[in-house]
Length: 227
Ligand code: DX5
Ligand code: ZN
Image 1 (cartoon, rainbow, N blue to C red):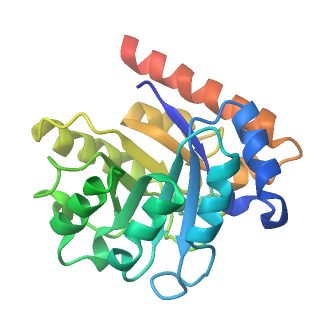
Image 2: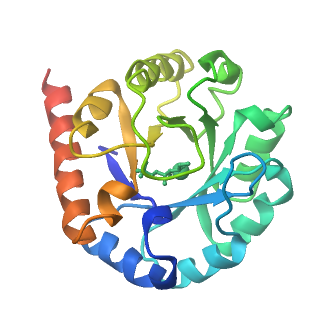
């Protein structure tokens, strides 16, 4: 894998999700990032397994489902059945993270763990060898269109070091406030799955914005591999 672009459908027009997915895919989206919020863990409510199922019928790339919900264990199976290829869960709500990660994998879905901006990396130290990816939040979850927290770059580097110590080549995903200005820096820090919502869908041409972000991200990977 070099770098994958995962447009976040949260910033799209919910009355025209199929069109948004198609535009992102024409622009070179590698995944579609789906933000699931329950109004408890985060102060917003979005969508559930039924919407994921409908998206699965039209998407040609894998669906990356980010669960921002208080009790993810209750819903993992439903999202897997709906067509999620990747499911990520927040460490802040899971006292039995090892069990949850292996339950996701047992459903044939890639398992990711998510760290909020204030959550220390030590929270995933004991599970680092088991995960398929780690999602570093670069905003406090709940809404699209927030400002990137600069400290996240160093956090990506530290998570990469932890995964490397665990002999796990799993990619790091970054989510929140990513745009053309900062994508090069987060890729240089080690991020290899790039989520972006408002920077793509709050533009006149989401297809072109996706293509431009991907070009910038791929350029940054080449630059960091020749450094
Ligand atoms: C925030 C979500 C993000 C969000 C990103 O809680 O997890 O995926 O949609 O949107 P932007 O790119 O606008 O910050
Ligand atoms: Zn997300």
